[in-house]
Image (tube, rainbow, N blue to C red; front, side, top):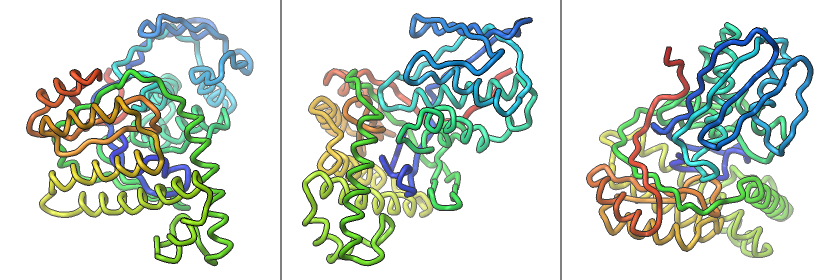
Length: 345
């Protein structure tokens, strides 16, 4: 779950994310040939391909093959496998199911090859990014891959070089809920990215030195207000999210942790995503309202938006909140912050 910082990582800004206890599991047996035979029973499909040479992609986001191609180019030792992939993460719902898959799959391939990077979550995260984003020239960032690989609560500042902290986890129970509304992640990312960068470039012409890390001063706000509608709302929302993420990081570092303030910040982050980035939906708004009425401390949409999931922070009454969200048509899961990618056996 992205706690703070949706649509920030691909701008080089900070995010705070938490890995949760819904998982992708991959198991398998070695084959004597150069074939991968991968059963995906949750999706009702099976994939078969040889890695004897570079594997062509048959679909737009062919992640199982892209990871094998990346490892093959690096001359990683490889054998064939019969595999089964199962998961409990809602698919195409804004909960990083594809990133969890590529992180788990890269971990599997590294373990199978006896590569020491299998024990280094940051290396696995980078391979996940290459597999899902760079290989297909997608507009996304690295947040999902690092959260899935490292686990817990991660605070990442996508500077050069990147700065990463695993924050102490004081958090209680969440209710994650799928709206059952499908979304277009890459289309949303591409639209937001292009308009924010265009808007920032226009502001920089009248405010020398302006960038996405510049303070949101009255002068900057005045210039943003002169931009075309989409550039105006998206640039302002990006800068407001940036500042809320800073406030969230300070909250995690304070003692004692203020659970109600955390919930209020989640709701404030959602308001920016709803009003400025415009990535919420009427159904998700109903689900959030029901969650707050049922006693959640705060709630927000999760991920790229336009459908998918929301979550509520409900340390005191998760069952009641889950029932209220279900009444609004959502599919709820009671979840907790959890560890990252691991080998079970």
